[in-house]
Length: 436
Image (cartoon, rainbow, N blue to C red; front, side, top):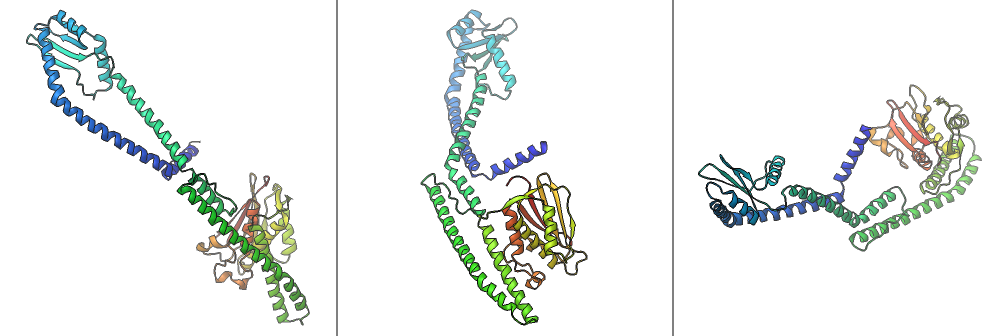
């Protein structure tokens, strides 16, 4: 629980640190505080100059006059008359008289100084008479300095409120940037038909319109490319079929076998291209049905790899998965073809395994061949990619196998991960047993 909260807080802090909104709010606060400090600093110097030049000498002279009026020794009647007539307090401490005109004010001041010992007090003034009595003068303004503390907290609250208002204004101002970010994420996932809402007609609105225009142009370009590729692939199937029929009539021999092999490779290439375009277009109609993955693996091995050695390590009691059996068989065949092609000279044959974790089922195909350099792993599932000379066409394939496997996994809402297994290559496909 604590670790989860710590990760959540750490993620929120990182988002705030990289958030343009919070940076603008922080800039607003810095400018506000700098302006406030500059204003109050200047006003403090103005007030201090006025106090030192005019106020303090006049107040000192006034206190001296009040002391003369009270007399020596202090006359309590005069002191009481002064406190009733003027907004001042008088406290007398001495060998014969101890008197305080406003004891409650004295207690408040004592409490205030206990809470705020660093406060410099300019309202209290002390005079010592010749007979040893000590007179302390103060102001009896009804506004207690304790209220200053509440005023300070009130100022903090107002500052927080202003911060929230500033964030709300910045958030509203930069809302188009959120729309543009979400739109670019969807474009990156292949949803080029999405359009970013244009909420305003300022620079950010113009940017959203330009991004929409760019996405539309890319969408039309890719659709044209796909249409051309599908048309070419469809048109090639008929002459390729006729060529294969004619090749069957050729006299048996190495030339005939080589010709049939090349025609089969061209057929597989065209089928792979058609299937990859259907899956990559986002409009693939999967014929899902509850499927026992272990049984599907066994059926694929029996039908297509009966004479090849392949080990299995299948987890018992797998849940039924909503799968398109034809396309998952295509995925299995490509993974096993890839593993068998690169197991020549390996100490043991490829292994097909399954594992279950909650509602997630993982299918793994591993070979024990030479593996692939780490810098090529991320590109292996791209179309027509071959890592090096060890995985060239001489070993079979045109570079569409793993690409098709990734498309099939993604069409089922799953993921495909390729890693080196030391030794060999391991490909894992994770699928969900939940509803599609």
